[in-house]
Every structure is written in structure tokens, then in C-alpha cells.
Length: 213
Image (cartoon, rainbow, N blue to C red; front, side, top):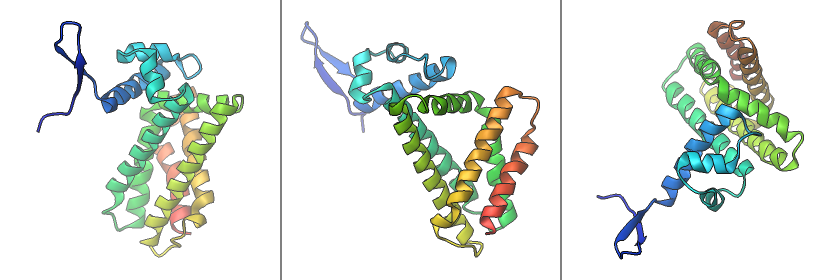
């Protein structure tokens, strides 16, 4: 089966390929991530992102209503990808200790590997306190993330005989996010001060408390 494309006509009457909307969107998101991580959220401009992706600024506005919406989409996709990765890796584990250690190590490696991303999220969080539009986007993201994390904890905890109600894990989810974010800040500020094992153990301590609750 061939890929679906859209065409229009050139002045010479020959068909001209137009990129699919989903391809344009994906290209803009990839370019936005690069630009945001390179120069930060505040300094990033939509025309710079569009140029990096090879499109016009109008293409950005036809897919995303604002820079806030563009960044919110990146946040949402990153959250979904992380949750899916964690679940796929621990779904087969039947031991509480294995589940905790595997998940904690996965998250710890993300903290150390993706320092530019974590610094970007911190910048966006600070901006959320100054800009009401950014604040609305960020609050929605954090609420979604806490809810998804609480649901994930509940699903795993139930297999070990712990409560299966996501509401039971809301506070644990908040503490876990704060631990990951705090470790990311420490690593970004002084990369040599915290080891992978220390980050892993910090996250594991929260997970053990949550899953054994």
C-alpha cells in the first residue's frame, strides 16, 4: 500500500506533492523540541521553529494555536511515551522488589540522560507562575501527569495485594514527581554530585512506600 499524499497544481500544471498534515505536525514537534532544548522556552520563537522544520510560521498556527499549546503537546507526548515505556517493561514482573528497582532505575536513567529536557520543564514551570496562559497549560499537564501516575501505581499495587483505588496514590504520585524533578535539578546544577545509584534509591524509596501501602 502506498502512502497517502495530497497534491495541488503548479503553474505548469504538474501535480505538486503537499506534505500530509500529520507529517507537518510531527516535523514541527521535532523542530520545537530541538529549539526549546537549545535556547529555552522563553527565548524560542515560532518563526525559528518553523524555519528549523522547513515550514512557514503559518504552518505552526494551523497546527498549534500558540507556543504554549505547542509545548503542551510536547509535554503530553513525553508523558504518554514514558508511561507506556514503564508499563511495558514491568508488566511481566511479579516481584515487588523487581518492579520497584526496575522502574526506579528506568526513571533515574531518564533523569541523567535527559537533563536538557528537565531543565526546560523547570523553566516552563517558573514561567507558569508569571504568565497566566502558560500557568493554565502547565497546571493541566501536571494534573494529568499526577492522575496517570496514580492510576499506574494503583494497577501495579493491586497485583501485590495493596489498594487498587488511584485516589489512594495521589499523594504518592505527587511525592514521586517531586523526587524526580528535584533530582533532575540537582543533576543539572552539579552533574557530579549525584550518582545514578543515588537517584535510583531515592525514587525506589517512594515507590516501595507507595506499592506497599
